[in-house]
Length: 244
Image (tube, rainbow, N blue to C red; front, side, top):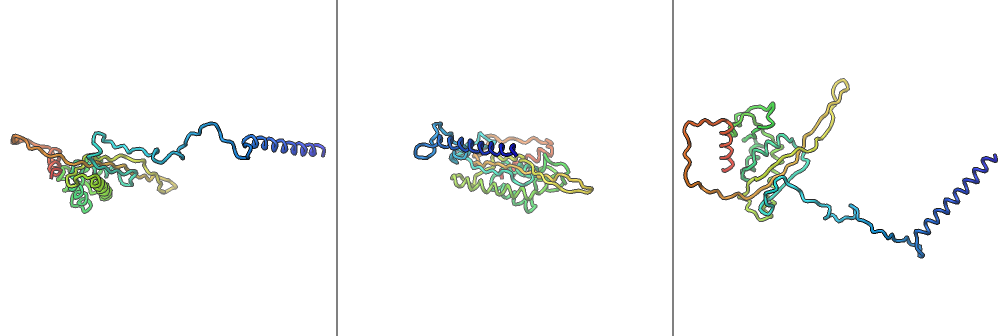
């Protein structure tokens, strides 16, 4: 009984001393008018108080030697479209004139023209339309063609805003990079769980005005009986399609 009464008295005394300490700190932090005192230390602005313009960074493109004043650019990040299919489709239109690239992608959607698969060609079926590019393995990636179509039209609108000649634009630079993979899961028999991944990508492209072609002074005579490989024939056909 005496022990509990002593503890109660100590508790009340501790509460009183804590309250007095709190009141002393509050009076120290206030001036004579009762307002909180201003700190002498200079406050450094944080990221929240920084204006929005100071936090925006310029987007960096891989091609640094192309002047921005004479080019139009467009890019897409974390696009949910196959990286491999988009990379092969982008390589097919690289170097083409803009109108030819738009027509080609529309033809890919209707399966009247085909996209050659050269790097990611594992387990790819063969088609006779690949003769246009000098290859046998080719496909019609419709979703990749649609994404590239949208980016090309965006870049064309940017070129029109800049005052560039939209009828003389070429695809000077196009690049497809891998984005972080999306991870999901699929449930299998016997309680197993397998990964169900997606492979998104980043796309960037630059359009520039085409340069005037200068005719050669002397006609080069083609040698008779020169055998060309399928890759060389495909290169010649692709160059002719690009110049068309």
